[in-house]
Length: 148
Picture 1 (cartoon, rainbow, N blue to C red):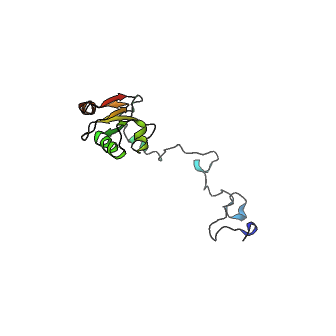
Picture 2: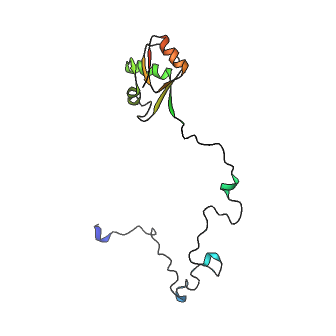
């Protein structure tokens, strides 16, 4: 086999309809568009979402709420996750880099520490935000919280 005798698989290609090439072709005259009417004319295009006069779906479905453009999206991480990470990797300082390396957060995430679970180690935690309960739990064990 070489490049000069390559062919597509049997039945994988079809010949295109040759439209508007005279009566003898069987597709002359109206060129498969039928007789008269808007769809038979050149330049016809239906509006996007047009449903033949029926009320279009985008008008039937009600609009709900709004999107706050000032919302700050945080990656929420509980205290028990920090505890597990600290014991596994033997860490005393937990910052964004250590969370990214562990696969818990991605490098573009803003991180918020939440108070879910229990903490038994003294940790130095650096994050973008802390919940009240998380801050209290970390500082109760003489750990430090730093907003980075």
